Image 1 (cartoon, rainbow, N blue to C red):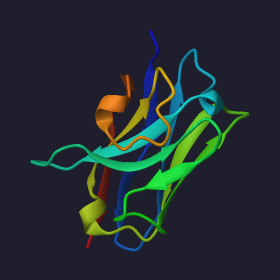
Image 2: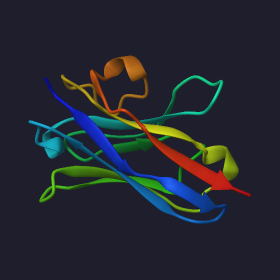
Image 3: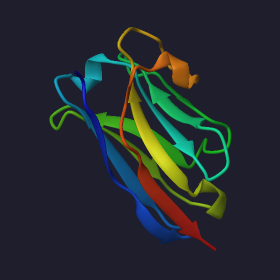
Length: 124
């Protein structure tokens, strides 16, 4: 069983930066398609960013230019660097890993393994 674990997050004022991290036990992350999603209270889970195994990336329009998804192969980690944060970025952020090749998929159903989520709170 693959276990996905997020870390990081926290609280920050608008305009600030945070980084959330993710690792997947038993997997070499650089070889797999990974995604970040978020879910705010009362809303559906939404796509944030994805990175496939060859390094292609995709971002939701709402975060493009502010967020960056990248990997650290030596640490077997995937990160979501979040800059210029806004109050509307407040949500629980989830990391997801795909069992098969899905590319830079935006649908949550493309991913098989999910972390427990980490809270990001942006105050105005």
